[in-house]
Length: 343
Image (cartoon, rainbow, N blue to C red):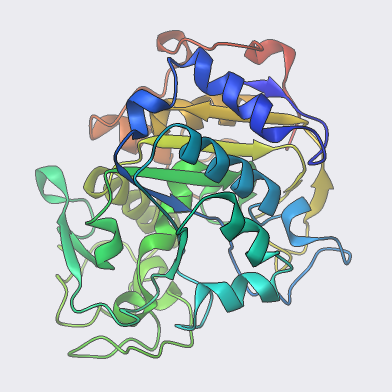
């Protein structure tokens, strides 16, 4: 963990020092294909109090540029930024421009940076199937854009936020956004994917009102609870098992509390002034949850998991990492010295 009060600070230097404390970035990414999953949840037209998206609930472009710079310096062979953009299969470049990003500046950081909207195939030939080890909790496997199959190291660039359904949304929950709406969307095809999706994924994933397109594996038990607080923590945990994260980054410089985006009425801006980095998403999210003022092992019915099961404990049960602070070595600032109350 490191202090960082503003996006105008030298983010590359701060983040680089954080990687050094973890043993260095080069051993993880040198000569490898690195895919960076951004967090661009919800329409870019929705803003909190007119604030820039990156200062509230979106990945900030300066953190993305810092990550790209460090990946290039560490010898990554291929750098690709991805997101399954809200309600569109259009180019990620255009979505970023609409979100206020300087796309030319991002692409100028490293040669041949790729930007891919993974909400549909978008010119790719086929979906890649990722099986959930152990058989899964809700789905046995997921059909995803082949970019994730071509990935050696997956980076999750998350915001430190609450989530109306899952309590918190950090590095692990960010990976829910790799599911393509063409397959798992409310307007996905019945038999085959809809390659022009224009809706979200709530009916399929959150509430189980419909199945994914039949080209993808159906859920294991259609009679299981249709409660989003039951389903989404399990979908998040099993997605992380099927397509593991190699680098978990949580932006807590500026963010929001009370929910994941401006459509949540109780949303409010917050400035924890932190960045968090780890090589295991469960442990990184466990520390992130504690930094938000919560007990990472809280059961359902306790803050922040009042309406849902605890994703951290579910991921721990799948063998993905520890959700106990006693088992996690924290370098840099200590947790007790950096807590910001989100509740």
